[in-house]
Length: 110
Image 1: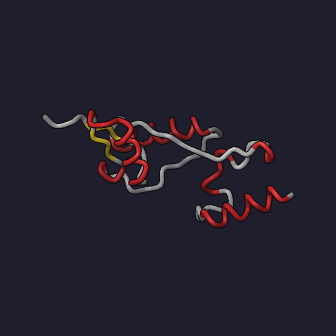
Image 2 (image 1 turned 60 degrees about the horizontal axis):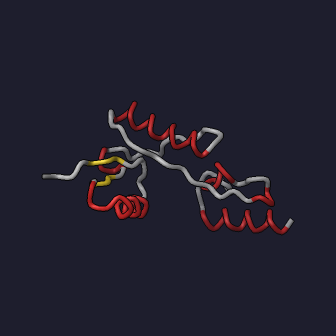
Image 3 (image 1 turned 180 degrees about the vertical axis):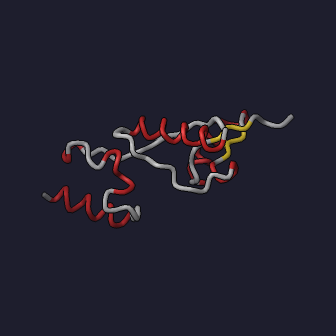
């Protein structure tokens, strides 16, 4: 009997693998590529929780597929919680992790 499929609102294969390992052999975890969602889903909510909800609702409304989603961010107390919800785009829309780290380190030096 095939395993029930759960759609995880991510195109990151590392995240899909991590969740699949956590859930064990009870479900087949598939990412957004498997349902044909190849675009960047807007993440415009003011909170991490809001972005996760926004992603799940987007997938349901555009692809007719129920899914679960997450959003993560780095919250630094010394920077009043920044970069928080803007972690991936902290240094710009190109989502450059090295530029994000450089900006973060510069902010912490202040």
